[in-house]
Structure formats: C-alpha cells, structure tokens
Length: 152
Image 1 (tube, helix red, strand yellow):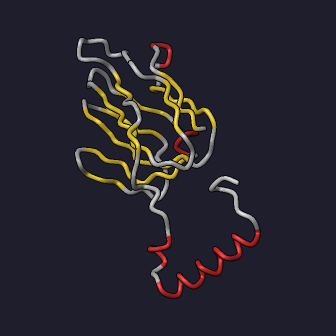
Image 2 (tube, helix red, strand yellow):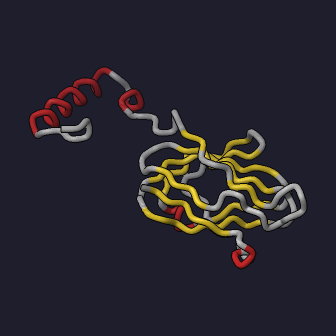
C-alpha cells in the first residue's frame, strides 16, 4: 500500500481525528496550502534581444497535476503578443498573477495574457486536470510561436 491508498478503517480513523481537530483548530489550519513550495517551470520567452521577434526557445513544458508551479512568460518587446492558452487556463487553479511585483488574485483563470511592451508576467497555479493543452501567440502561430503545456 502506498501513501495515497487507505483502507476503510484508516479512512474512518482519519475522519474522526479530522472532526475532533476541527473542533479545536480553525478550518484554515486543517487545509493544505497548495500554493506553497511551488516549482519554477522553464520560462517562455517571446522574441529575442537580437531582433528576432518570433523566437521562442522553450515551446513545450510538462508538469504534474496537483502540484504548485510558477510560469514566467516574458516578452522582449518586439511585437504586441497575445499569449493564448484558454483550455489550459480553464483546467488550473490560479493562485495569482504577478506583474512588476503587483499581485492579481483572480476568482477564476484568465482567457489570455497580453504584452504591449517588454516585461514578464508570472502565473502561479496548480494544474487540476491532466491533458496536453495548446498555447499560441494570436496571429503568429505560423511564425512558430506556439507550443504545448502538458499535465501528467
């Protein structure tokens, strides 16, 4: 039996212990903070500093469901980039979006993120559904600005 498998007696014992603990501890103390201990994923960089506005060195990223991650998406400012990943965004729990040390705590995931100038947007999230999700820069897919985000 691995750590994730419990028999009926263990589950009942955990339930009783949890119920007793709920009488003593505040509800938040019993929850696991999935946002802590996040892993930084490889950065997606749009354009390079040598004038190639369509360069994307990292296109495909793999992660595990149920773990916390930070994904930095950076524009080098050569073009206006609309980073589209609507299916991926619908299948994650978004903890926060950080731009220039300013935090956005959404009540749901964004449809896309957009760059009008150079800069980095940090997405902090937990994937909740496995699958392979497409991302692309709207209107620039044929220039090679597309990839995948795979959740195992």
